[in-house]
Length: 284
Image 1 (spheres, rainbow, N blue to C red):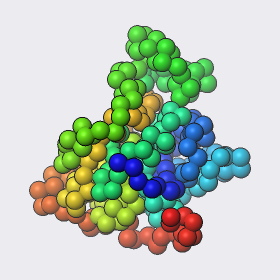
Image 2: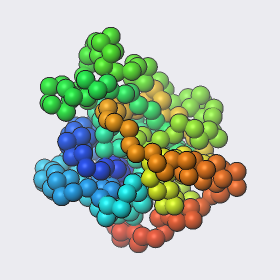
Image 3: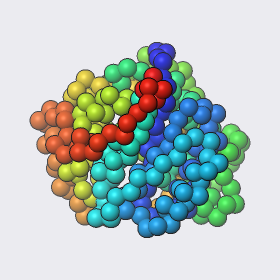
Image 4: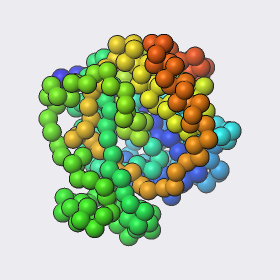
């Protein structure tokens, strides 16, 4: 379905990994579609992340912003809400600060945008060795050819090739409208109005895990249904050690309780933050 879509706000969550964030920004700067902005949602990083973003602002092909909150543990829900409140686009595209994109990423998500739907994309995982090469500047997967990806798969550098396929926007993308499983904020798109309709991410989720699934569950409960972004706009996820998952059991309990209750609005959400004034041009 073709819709009129203006500015897209890309929300990048990050925490103390400026080396990876620099690569993500470089990949976004190469996008064919330039009608977007970038807001870095910083969950309490030290000053080097802010310095990186400040150094990239001048000369970056689109507007680039940085929002920061105090480091009080893993609070991804809160920093994403804060970034959305500071953004300008009518369409939100969530990305992690360790996920590289291909040059058609924004364009493909724009083509998939559809009223009353959110789009759940997928990812290709990079192995530890290949990630080291990428971080060392010895290769750049965001500029690879199909042969380069095939070679990387053969050598064990990436976990799969199928996400690289480009399939048309047909009925099959809407066959699982109520599926919340597997929708992650490393590659997730939603209309701004729908984000505010469910009050954004639930900031009661502190520590790693499941704040994105709970957000998607509330969207579905509110009548905003899943559309598959597979075979259209994958991300390339850099390897890293697992996060501290001490708080996961409580987050998982809260997720299932909210799903069972059919909640639609976050108890502690984006309405805590005043929205940045938007011009008429930004709201088209």
